[in-house]
Image (cartoon, rainbow, N blue to C red):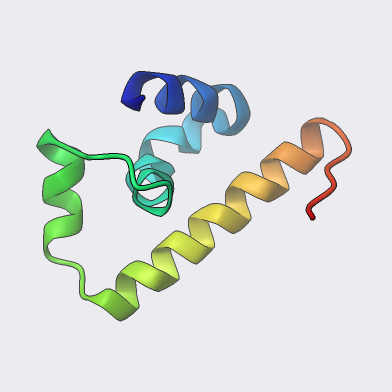
Length: 72
């Protein structure tokens, strides 16, 4: 699951994919390990919520730039 998510994000976000991956993965309840897990370790709940929201917004904006996007 980690590899598929990372590949999908690279296809949509290009250069930002590695930066946003840990936050999108957390939103999707994908288990993180290594540097990605360490990156989240020191972030408090409120900060994590803000980073997840920002990452999701960036993902949606990038996806909408590629083709029309409808969110239900």
